[in-house]
Image: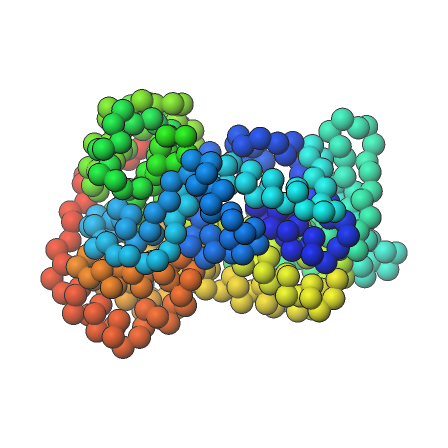
Length: 441
């Protein structure tokens, strides 16, 4: 997704844009190169807005393809085992599978003049000038060829995801590798698709989301998606991973802090076997701190910063970075890396603080907790309790979590008053005693 969104803005500045991928880029099935693609994906509200800007009519085409939509604040949210008071936010939730979202964007990008998709190619490494001051292309190896091929380029954008080899390539070219910040969460998703025998059991709801919190670490996301199907992703952190066997999967569902999801799926038709995906740690690479960087090369998407996926930030942050790239391209066809990375870091700061701070609220997560983080987490616990009673708190919370409004909106005097008064006396939900489930790990 990051590469496709980069290609969209590059097409406005270049006569030719080549998108290189190891997978064959066809259809709307889950790809090997996107192992998280089978699981629930959240396109945050700001991401939906940007896709609508870059591809006018995007949301309408998704609806025409059978994708259900709803208001983000009117979904069935649970935090700390308690239901949030619903509220209209004006923000659209596009409830589609990741492969369908990607196919919609890919088809729109492929239709742009000058854009060419090259699937089935492994990227071997960059090509640079003799003095190594500038990258002039990439060396690729097509799966059906015995020799490498060089694609010459004025600008190379690395959007290869968490496994990006740019740090290694920088070292080979004589540059420093970027410093990294890691937040180990040891998360696993286990996902299964269903067809409900009677959708009235959902009472019109688009999704049911008991979110993982320190008081109730086991979480889940259940959503209606396209083609009359539904998808359930169970989440477990710090090694308490949802099993992929039939019995273990259902036992994990029963152990969730609320019974809502089990009541929905117990009579539903499973469409596949459970499949797991493991995410060890969030990683932020600080390219903005480097003193030297070769011209003609940029990095964005998960290759720049990979977020804990339960916060649903990855696609939206990639979209925000694409807008940043567009602004830099307006100043010249080859952006200065240092300036781009500084601006991209500002894009990453807020979502990183949200996800990293949320992960550090779990006592078992290793990492520094300065006073700012401790205070923010204490306030968020009160805010989530207040949202159980006050829809205005839910509305503001969802607009900030959707990356539409800045976090400062949560600290406005009127909101602080609501949080402090409405959170008083909210009864805690007891944690259900369950056996630790790690089967299939």
